[in-house]
Image 1 (cartoon, helix red, strand yellow):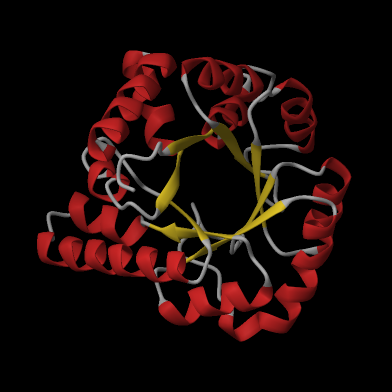
Image 2 (cartoon, one colour):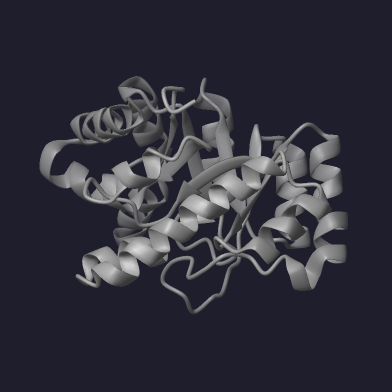
Length: 248
């Protein structure tokens, strides 16, 4: 199983962050998505936040029209976002927690406390053919709840593992990695498709990429940052190489 191909989803949110810092139309996240596609990305991820701080409605329109790889549409569980997703019918919809004051997504969605609401929220998305993913912490209770509400996919939040590595707290890093490993296997045993992402870099990707149950990694901020120094195509190519090496 470990030799199976591991998909790479490239998140292009922060191309839009740079564009919005000055206004105007450059750099264009749709152009970045097309370059990522040509560089070997298996899908494109974009998070339409309620405050539109980076990706905009027009970006989603453009991505739906331009892409030949699947769009993974990240969104909060709100009526507004549900309507947008139902109108566009992207390949995948990933439900994420969202707070206005956060710089980036700080943790996984609290599914266990909102099972009834979330089950009703995702049902129409599944009915129109969207593959529904839930972004959660590597926690058995949350995984079980995601399974019960009818999600087809979970995406495990790798941020705590990556942060511990960056801080040099290797004991915590190793504990977080082992939890991710165990919960990937547990989710797979329930029949859930397992994805992972948040904060992954060249230094942290391989241990997660080696988990045989994980079939997709979604990586954005690091790749956009690395593209400043080496270009987007080489940045993606290096991530792809490391993922393939870990899988082999």
